[in-house]
Length: 504
Image (cartoon, rainbow, N blue to C red; front, side, top):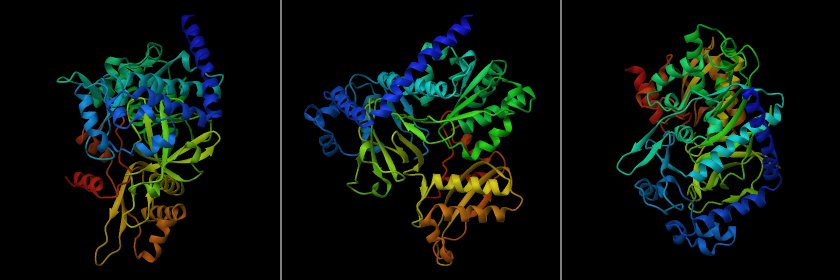
C-alpha cells in the first residue's frame, strides 16, 4: 500500500511541473531576460561583479559589451582561489564542491564550481523535469513502482582546503534529495566507490534482484554494465532479469553508435530519452517520443548565448542571445550560471531545429572536430556516416576515434579511423567506401577536399582488437563516470596514444 501511495504522490507532484515547462516554452525571451538580471543582482558584490561593474548593468547590451568571453583557462586563477576556500569570488559565499571534468577537451582536468543553488535549481530541477516530461508522454507508466539504476563516479576531499572534487554524478548522488534517493539503486556506499571495476561487480550484485524500471547514465558505460549483468545471471535478455524495465535516460555520448547493441539486449521495445547534461549544467532534455532533438531548459539558472562556429576563433566574435539565433546553423554554446561561470564557452556546438519552442541538437565540440585540411568535419557528420556504413554492411561499431594523417611531399592528407567493431563488416573496403561517400554527402567542405584525392585521400581504417578502448581508458584512469572516448581530434595525440598501446 505504501509503495502505491508513494507512486501516486510522486507522479502527481511531477505532473504539476509540466505547467512550469510549458511556461518557459511560451515565454522564452522574457524568462531569459529576467534570469540574467537575477544572476547579475546575486553576484554584484562578488570580486568578479565589482570588477565588471555589475551594480549599474541594466540591459543585456551593457552585459555583452562589458564582460568578455571566457574559456576555462581565463577563469582558472579565480577557481583555484575558490578551491582554496576563498569566498565571494565568482559567486556569493563559499563553494565546497567542484566537478572535475573528464578531460576530453584537453589533458588537464577542469574543476567546475557547483553551488547549492546550481544543484537545486539546475541539476535536480532538470531531473524532475526529465521525469515530468516522460510521465506526460507516457501517462500509463508505472516506473515509480520500481527502482532506477544509476551509474556514477566518485569524489575526493581536498584535505588542505576542506573542499571536494570529483565526477559530477558523484556530487549529485552525495547531495541527492531523499525522495530521489528512495527510488535509486545501488545505495550511496556502492554508487560512490572509487574503483570502477569493483564498483561494477557490486552494482550487478545489488541490482540484479531488484525491480528495475529506469536506467540512468552514459550509454557507453551502461552498455558495459548490462553485458556484465547478463553474464553474471547467465541470461540472454535484460527482460529476463528486469521484466518491468521501461526507459533509459542517457547522455554524455551519442546513442547512435550503440543503438543496435542496445536493441539486441532487450526482447521488448525500450524507450530511450536523451539528455544534455555536463559538469557546467543541465542544458536540455528530449521532450518528444520519437524526435531526438532536445528542449533547451531556459529557467534553470543558466543564461545562454551563442557564437557562430565560424566566428569562434576570432578576437571579437559575434555573439547572440537566444532571440537572435537561426535554424540549422552551428553555434558554440556560451553560458552564465548560478555557479559563477560568466560568459563561459562550454566547448560544445549546437544547432537549432526549432525556434518555437527552442530545440537543439548537439552537433559536436569546438575542439572535437577535424579541420586539418579545411574540411570542418564535426561529430554529427561522423555519427551519421558511420551509422549508414553499419546499416549497409550489417556491422556494429563498439567504439571509435579519428584524427588526421598529415600531408607530406609524396602524399595527400587523410583521416585515420580506429574502429573497434562488435560485428565486423564482411568487406572492410565496402564499409570504407560507404563511410567516405556519406561524409561527402553530409559535408560539402569534406567533399571538396576529397576531389581527385588532391588535398584529402580516402579514409584509412584501422580495426582495433576487442577491448582496446576499454584498456586505454583504464590505463589513463578514465573508467566509469562521465569519461568517454574522444571521437574526433584535430591532431594525432589520441590515435597515436591508442595505436601505441595496441602495439605494446
